[in-house]
Amino acid sequence: MALTAKKKAFAQSKHDGADNKQAAIFAGYSPESASQAGSRLAKDPDVIAHIERLKINTEVKVDSKPEPRPIITKKDIETAGSRADPLKFLEEIWTDPVEDMKMRMDAAKAALPYFHGKVAEKGKKETKADEAKKATQGGKFGTLGSQLRS
Image (tube, rainbow, N blue to C red; front, side, top):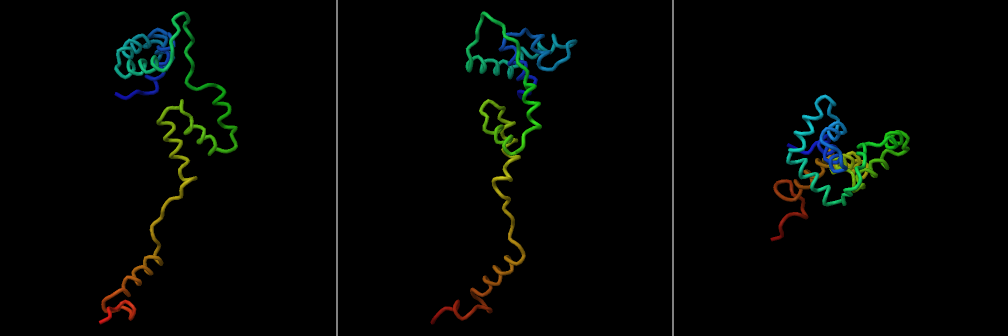
């Protein structure tokens, strides 16, 4: 299966030093089933691969067990509605290298119409003019300039 947001949160929490149950609770699973979910997620190949990628990208300190960070901070939630220009907000998201790639692509798609206009088909008048020009190029209705000189 794909690497979901819960699996990413679980992997990040495991990488930060939490045990399976605490990591599952942090990822959003209920405390009653967190032990089973943590055990299942710890064996998931996608989660294992994500933890390995996290280990490669950052150095792990063995002495300390840091608290897992929440996915969205309170500051981000408070400032999201107060931004004057939503286009600037989208630009911040799609240019942020730390942000999830799917989120970056969605932000770029949402802002695309503001930078590149939609290409429309030819209108009726333009099509009619092109067909008239094509008709004058030869055949029965050809103009004097388009006829072959003999």
